[in-house]
Length: 312
Image 1 (tube, helix red, strand yellow):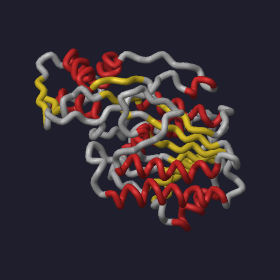
Image 2 (cartoon, rainbow, N blue to C red):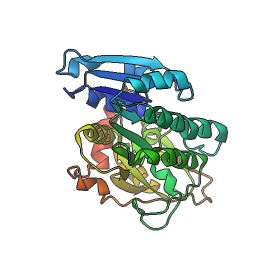
Image 3 (cartoon, rainbow, N blue to C red):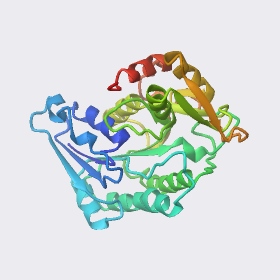
């Protein structure tokens, strides 16, 4: 079996790769990435092939853009399973450079879907979307909630979903709306709020809180995301939209956890008068009809483990 992972060198992609190499049914993994983050950690350190029980496993990189139609279609023609993770993701400034979001997240996804429609080999597609498509809500949202994105990022991801849904009647196709991802791996993003808090707390002993800190958001650990996505290869689920979250926190709740680790922590508010958008997602996921339900891990325990990863 050949697996294609767009965005495979990114934050979630690195975690997924560590899981996929353990699957003995996979003989080849193609990473399709433009390396736009200049983050090469996935290519260094622990030898991925040594984790595999399949001694014939081949891993290769295709350095390419989603909008490079010819190169993308050549990669898709080789694949049986496709994970589409590649996206422009920059927080918290998700309302700048709208053209780039539209080109990558919307039209890049459209190009991938066109290529899949022309390839008889592809048996399954997993598209990593975002809970940002729900926008802001005071009420708990689930998969039946009507999307109402309020950022250029959320709009572009929803438009990408619309292209992906064309594949629903053709091949098993899963749209995974992922919460805010956090936690350590080699390719971690420090613009993600929990990761940024931990970096600032460890080295500066001061964190910056945007808005009043009372906004709630949905979160999930990157290790959990990698594990769930890898399981989807061998899971028989109907083509559909699935949320992927396991915690809802106010930003101030996260601050309390970080302060429990760094007792001398200071924090300052930036634009405290602003009440930023809120979104809480029902953690009783539709996904649990098809996958075993996991126990929610303690954020304090996860952050304690995160702290051990800093070099000093």
